Length: 468
Length: 66
Picture 1 (tube, rainbow over the protein chains, first blue to last red):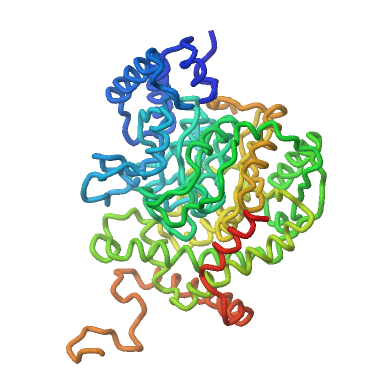
Picture 2: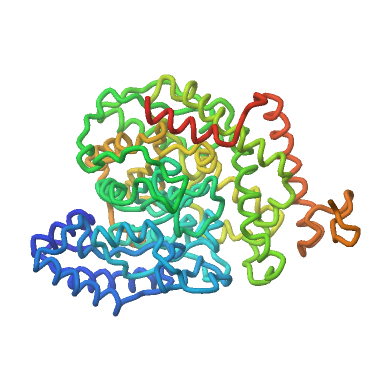
């Protein structure tokens, strides 16, 4: 019998639709795996077993009477605990929480429900999604399912751990400076951070709205395509949600990738650990084997981009936390408190300069960096997978530098708003890591087609502790 | 108009004085902001006077049409 943990959401939906499997069976198995995963990784905020099983029974009844037609009908999922759900209070991974239950579902949650998906749990995140490592001094740190002494990456830590473990096939996360890419890379799975505005942020906890991007972590690229198709599109509740037409991402998975031009900026990656540089070249070699063509690629000034994104993010986040930092400072964990304070020292003029420059710098990047390439490849982590202890810097003086090193290759892309796809490296028995493919705005279908082809060479894996 | 009884801070007040921060963390935050301010100043000099925060969305939309 097929191990349900290995199935994609798309395959699971088909098995349920074709009545080879009931939603109740799939949900019971997912609950059991989530419990085991939690023991290992601290991935859960709340398991909603009874509610999930009731919803699964209802889904089975709807499928039996041909009333359920959504592409995810009866499929158990779980999400980062920062999305509004009607009548519930999200934890935000923090001690400070919303003061009343949500009046409505976040748009992403509502669209998953409309597609028939079930939500069976809420998952771990960095406090206020403000941390790139999976450390959380309020909830306890998340642990990597491949090696529990190592970080999961953050902030969408629980989603990545649960997906990697095979507890769920996919789940929601968000990315303001790397929070979909870092945990996917650290846990050896895929993620899509779409173009800024491609998925509505309505009802998602804000961190830095100018950069916040909702996306998905999954083991199979085909699930990223399926879920992005469900989630993307305009939303009157989020004025930044794009009305650019949404392609059929699943149909586009089989688009030919031969001749797509791919490049690595060797200057930018020179500051990564040599092993990480090697990973980038290894993945690029696989892409070339799939028919992509190498081409030159150069980001004009990576450090300037890194400063500009901080000039946007730090005050944006500090503004959101300004009142709580004054009224409830001791309810913050040490690291988020220290990081959220910094934005108060950046002038409004400097913040607005970075925002005013954003269009010009995106345009220049498209004209220069993407002049000869369709896809740029960069690392996600600058270093091999760190341990939880190595990055346990709390609020010490090294916090900005240590966290800056972790997001060195991710946060600048948020300033540009470009879509990225995380690809896990071929592990060859070692620890996971990942690289990001970066495309032009709205190039998600191309990224997903490349990722789908890549997974024929580097198939998805289920994470279990390695014997080191 | 500023009321004579308003609690507006004097111009030379410590930034973010309302935050309860130990001196060393405050110094680190100020140094980091000063570093970023240098980049902001350089970029400001390169920006056209008409540069607008909405330019970013305009470029995204243009790209979708191309």
